[in-house]
Image (cartoon, rainbow, N blue to C red; front, side):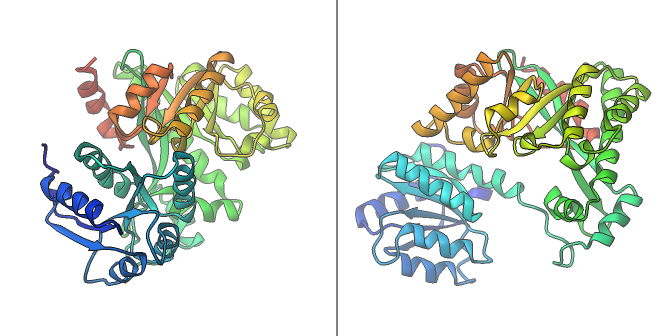
Length: 404
């Protein structure tokens, strides 16, 4: 039996299970995997007391849904209100449809859900879920240096000082393993707070109608990066997430095309991603800009497919050529029948519409293998690579290409 890597073996685990045999079995498997700090609780109230004790320092909590007193769902609700960011793994022998509902509830509460194990658990299944801990933790927003959220004034000052840069996450073709492109994500390289994710600045910019400056900064830098990649012998496409606000401005399509011409980039190498919720907009200028961009040869993609309330009629108004399947349909689909059916249905739709499909949130080999089997076109996620600074991208491409 393989052991957990040392950082994971040194975590503190809490096992919440009322059945003594099941609890002892889970503790024994964790011990055999190398875990040394394991705490036990036989009911929800005891578990909550342990979780609220800062001296315990619980990192991962295994929760049986059907426990006495306070059941697993109520425990998760209390955990969501806590300032302690404990990751959870659900353990249950209940109906998969019910478990899927609880998974959705946990994610809606904002709890860091690593996944679900079906009783009886296996060492391999445990190890696979625990290995997600580092991946999930690295996705959390970077804390600010003084613990306070940046003000709008500070954000705008950062934009004036060119502190915002794109980080790039590779997109790989499943059939061949070849790198097909990269997606640009805005990051803030704050001189005092460090690297900050979009959750720390985009809400404030959107709420105050100030997205234009950030959007154009990322567009120009991404265009330059695309040009540099091509000059270095890597003719990859670059995907850009576009907010509704810039696309609602007159002449956006013309200015966007002019920017790409200035950098010597063919339109076919640029993909503009529109969130599914934005696809339902009725703004005529928004729709006109998308139509003009498509006429000029740029590629359009519907992002976060499956999470918004846009109907297929709304989707078809947009001349998209790529459907990006949201991570909520991908993670765990290899082991969850309901998720697997939803994923297969989404991919079948893309195939029937003769569109490319890209699955995001691909975190395990099982995710990759299932997507390959279902005929998904491209994959993107931490199993392949995290978003990275442009300087790291050429080296990563060379290293990845050695395997294909």
